[in-house]
Length: 389
Image 1 (cartoon, helix red, strand yellow):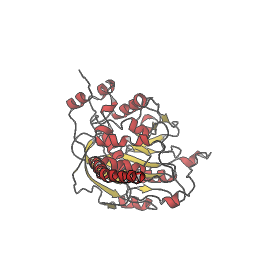
Image 2 (tube, rainbow, N blue to C red):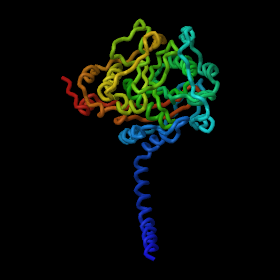
Image 3 (cartoon, rainbow, N blue to C red):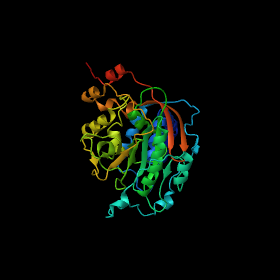
Image 4 (tube, rainbow, N blue to C red):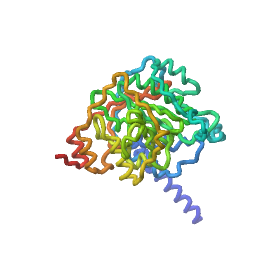
């Protein structure tokens, strides 16, 4: 009899407390809806691998996105009318019931005939419709491709900051799709297009790319890449490791030599834990220059790591300097900000502020259209506790 009373008491408590718990959880979910959705996108689909080994790293997305200001302002904007696109898709993912049984993809770099790995850079412009025909085999809308006969070791998101460089973008897509396929990668190309008349902000566009890409797929490797750089050697594997990688080591404009030991520009690779521990890219460099130097400081000072590079003879790139591109004006405060040794926790993913206009899923890439409201110089210096004389 006493046991029955105990059971009844537990049932009554459950009935009374359940609505309270439900309401509390519901309110928390409602308050953090965007953050939770992005966080779950990291965890829900893990193709061909176990659940993330370090889930605590991924939970940092909640903190970043809770502090991020994202407005939505829809506009009718299609900058590339000759390209096939859709305004909505179900992001195509490998079927895990089939994919998990496949062997691991393995691109060999041991061929002694080095000419096998050389990639010629061809300066021939085609319309988007022609480029689509070049690379349409097994390519899914949004610029997502994966092999059907093996499992890729990583899920790679390539983030390309963009503004008014259509000719460069066409050359880039025509070159990068075959390059990434030959390396047998599971990859998606995201082009982040900055609207408005504000100065170009490369670091912020990289952060937008990370935040928005994670809503579609459980990427575990991010490549941050300029649109005018073209790799020349297939041994330059686009992948992430336990340290950030500088990919664009030896460019033709620098006589195929590393510009200087702290140079970290052009193309880089970050795994998610390292990217989050860096607090993403800086958002404070409006105009040309500063964000690359800032990022390597974050790696050294915040991660307490060094970067890795392939040898010069492998990490070779051509830079396209034609098509009348005008470089952005240099940021006059960049060197003073870099020398200030400011707290990197005060700027980055956790301070992002942007307006998302629309996302278009072209056959060759995913286009994310945003506006970045410019933060006044005085506000930046005050927020970061920087004193410039």
